[in-house]
Amino acid sequence: MKIAVLGTGMVGEAIGTKLIETGHSVMMGSRTANNEKAAAFVAKHGKDKASAGTFAGAAAFGEIIFNCTKGIESINVLKSAGEKNLSNKILIDVSNPLDFSNGMPPTLAVCNSDSMAEEIQRAFPALKVVKSLNTMWCGIMVNPAMINGGDHNVFISGNDSDAKKQVAGILTGFGWTDKAIIDLGDLKTARGSEMLLPMWLSIMGTKNSGAFNFKVVS
Amino acid sequence: MKIAVLGTGMVGEAIGTKLIETGHSVMMGSRTANNEKAAAFVAKHGKDKASAGTFAGAAAFGEIIFNCTKGIESINVLKSAGEKNLSNKILIDVSNPLDFSNGMPPTLAVCNSDSMAEEIQRAFPALKVVKSLNTMWCGIMVNPAMINGGDHNVFISGNDSDAKKQVAGILTGFGWTDKAIIDLGDLKTARGSEMLLPMWLSIMGTKNSGAFNFKVVS
Image 1: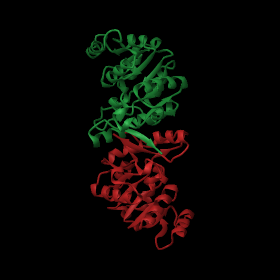
Image 2: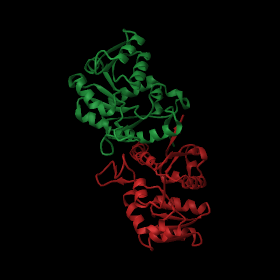
Image 3: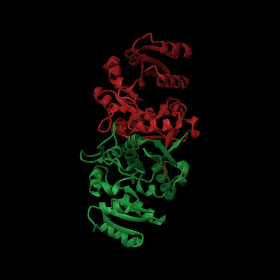
């Protein structure tokens, strides 16, 4: 598939690389078409599978769009991507609305009675927003077998069942087993996965490593 | 030890019972000294180990105090318990500030840049507040072996190291192994464990059961 990855940070790089390794074509989108990290990504993976463009160019290219930008910037990024380039497409929202402006620990710019994912969905009603992968370090997102033999969980939230099935398919490509994927329900449940971040950050602090994840046991 | 359990709901009943089973004396505190559930608790466990009283009576009795009241009522409960009865004691705060007044899903009455545990600590500076056990169903709190052979996690947050050690000792009595107990850090980290509730509620909805818990794997 043709997939857009918005954002050239660690998360975009990890997800873009895994998508190419699993047979997809990726356009990495950033504020400017000549972003250095995006150019390095294209040089590394080759021009037949990898390309770089603006947020709008990448969104136009992608049949599916990964939002790997910072949560607090995501609405503006998507505005610059252009509504017509997003229409009827699946947006996999990996972002978290972390706000570091008041020091450590960061707070969430939106939470409790709302979420980043719901904000995006309201701003772009023709998008099919699916929240996923935002509850872990990017190394684990694309290589779940790195810890505990892959036996831990990734969550999905969204209002469109077919979109969630397609996202589950992509997660399977990343190495997640069916039983590892927990469909929490509609997009309101993204509040829960985004509000997991303060706990994640505390545990990261105790371990001095992001190489961990949550497993629901019963 | 002499332990006060504030609150006569499912959580207070489960914790009070386990404390008695593990050799402690428990006074269950409620708004009135003649609460029916507290009376049933005393009748069940016998007057040599169990007693009932007002919040103030229980707090005066306890060397350690469990807050098993609803989060949104906890400050008022502790006010009626009386500052002098709380002074220099450990309060194990099991509460969550769930607010159902705006319908489902509930929101948190406090979160993000603050927590219920921190509110209590600010209101009663002479208390040693330790947040714990609030991230799971009460059946699991006192019987971790019920699921996954006891191999899952309970979190502790608090500003007083000695108080956290004592709480860890009580958790050990409840059946938690040393490696299952994760000290997240100071009381600010209670934000994370309280903000886990929306995720907990979503998972409970998918399972139709509270008999699950989170395990951190790495």
